[in-house]
Image 1: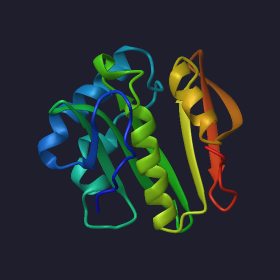
Image 2: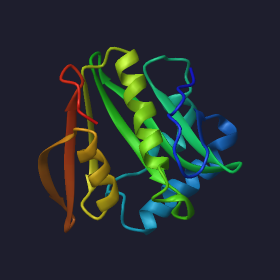
Image 3: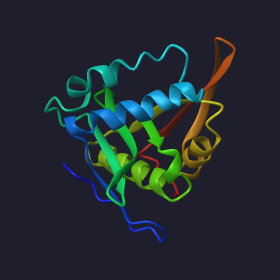
Length: 169
């Protein structure tokens, strides 16, 4: 199922469901976040290594999207079921050449719409403290910081949003 993102004033952004053909760029975006220190230390990328099983297995409860701008993949985001009514938002990444252009917003809106459409009542996520723009985006969309964990001398922030209390974004 494809969820369209709203129009943005800057670049034309198309959000579409990812395919196995997107795996090389998905892997590149993930690996860049590791090297930039934006991925938690113990994140093995198992969902990326097992992309088909994690997101494309035919389950309507998990999904992964890519954002395209000017014919190239500009970003990505995934949703995985944690419990019947709880989803985890994963892998929000925007290519450095496309940041601050509405790509992250469009991806987040797509994932939120998917979660609402699939009757999730809560979304959880975690993010390294170094990912300031992502944290700002989560706050804008009504996510609440629930706790901070220290792991290998890095701070990991956990966020959630309850969809039965619609955020004012």
